[in-house]
Image (cartoon, rainbow, N blue to C red; front, side, top):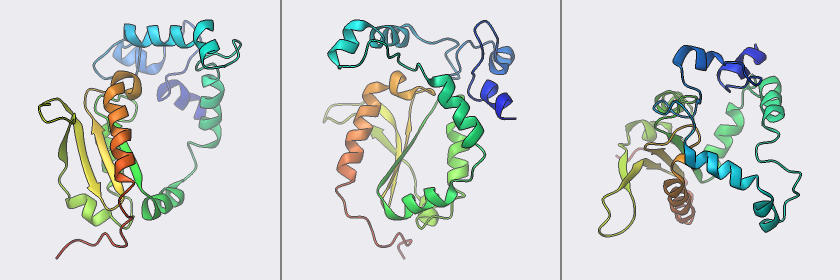
Length: 201
């Protein structure tokens, strides 16, 4: 089961072999529901990140390869992690820490709608308020900016966001939006963790 999962959800396969995802959809790349193959910018990034020049700049051994252990990591996850219930640990974090949880609108692997549906079922202390809170538009900051980056909800110590136009590799697809999201979260962390997330009367 883990082997089949790795070839479908993770889209891992040997060179020249088609994954089930590719066979069913015709997409060579599973990062986005609208883009059938990895974009040129991402490919250029991987080439540069794997270049000797870049490795020397960041003081990394030239023998290292970006994503070089992806297969091993994915296999370990499939065999040891995917079938383990982590709800207790997740609830502990949600109930006691500032959290940033974000999804990508065009993610074909972990669809936004599915993730939010499952998130709504979690019995954390802010669950009831989260389920009735309306999302708000998240725009690029600036008095004259009209660019929309996504949507967000702020409930207690949780910042829950959806990044528009991003796929599974959202940090590559929407790098500026994601960096702005992190900055917003760092500011959000400065607010005190609420002692209660009860619904206002």
